[in-house]
Image (tube, rainbow, N blue to C red; front, side, top):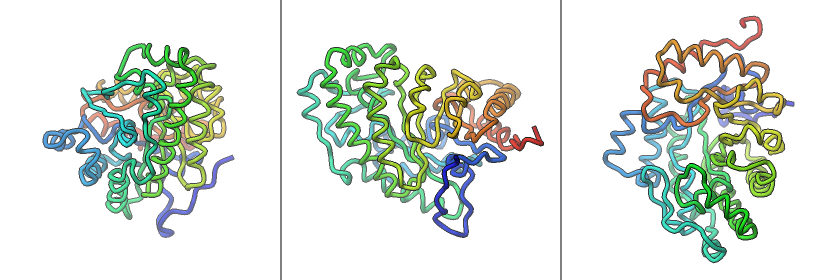
Length: 356
């Protein structure tokens, strides 16, 4: 049964298309937003980055708000997403992080002693700059009927980075740690779960209208390991976000083998990567909204290929509520005009049965 969306903040304003679809309405047009839409493929973003480091942009509310709003000034997108990073709450735990370009942990977790040294900060300590950026964006979007999505990393994915220390092809140190130090791993996941809850609830208090939980490395695990080290903690985070009037979105990358388990999570929207068609996914989530799942590399192709592949995804998304998105973040090489063509294509696709 479709969840009942809360009344809009302004009773004179219709509930935005994105939120209607996220709450389970099978809308006549698929709303569209794009992961990493605020970022490195846009020249206006690069202009800001030329005078401020990544962390300066994240931690300066005015800059984070500006970057969040940049794609909305250029494209008729159906939602904004806060400019930030999934690693943001870890700094308040005492973790030193650099980007080169991906995250680098100065002292990777290697023992229970390291885990016990991590702080569980009070909610107001975690990311007050992000909450202020949310308030700034909401003020700018007032009356425009464009909702703002907040986000964070799932406990498992945050643990993956903390233990591995940096990006990796196999994440062998992380996967070995789960087997060699399972009790320590659970202690770490407990802390990360509590911090994630406090961080995401802070975003909701500040005005975020939906939350996406990124589980970028869930696909590394087999079903039994996911059940042990991911499912209970992700469930707790999502349960803690219930009742806030914001739909909950979950993305697990490379995790098609886990969809029978992911179907047990309390959420409204399942975001799907590009590896499996939406028509194959929908039977696992008959009462949920699907989000996705164009391969980001398609946006490097000519316009006629973009339209062809977008139509394929749109047709696969029929039969239930669908939010159009990429299957992962937009690539830095993407020409902005190609994204504009994609948005135009999605906006022109009528999902009503008599038109298909």
